[in-house]
Image (cartoon, rainbow, N blue to C red; front, side, top):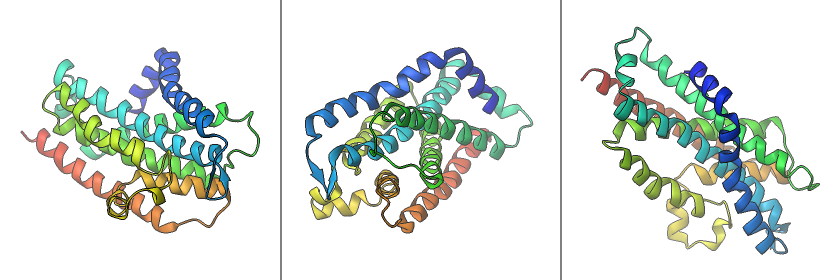
Length: 239
């Protein structure tokens, strides 16, 4: 699986890079310029915005790089059947997809960090920052595999993005703080993984104390999604 991702990146790295950076840069320009003079929790809005967009980029890229390609392999190319009859242990195939998707997500996040490098004191990066990026990528790579296994048609993947990924894009502590959201909505949003990734990246960037319960939430999501995905894909394999 990793070799497949490498070969794909080798021949299409320009397209992959442009696709990974286009939306984050547009978000950065639109919201950064439009609201850049505001303060959020005592910090310039641009410092609040960038960690959120990085979390968003790792989410979108990890999910899309796994979910879309695997859905095409399963429903259109029919190459998924070759994987089913191969002697490769199923958990190894799944781990390969997870690692490949999470690395692609980290690549998108690092690209954005490079873009904002000319702006000094905007974001502070530590090894834990990259760990959170990777863990966020793992969660949404698993979600991509699960969505591609459940989808009955190509359109189902788009619908899943519309009803699951799109709401998280705009509501989960990315473009505005959760304090602005009604309490009932806050409770629901805090059960989702993305606000915890955004909050962790923002705390690391600010130099604030780390909310380790958010790390636990991401780990729990990764474990639960791995089990669900393994069971779902195993049932398809046995059909």
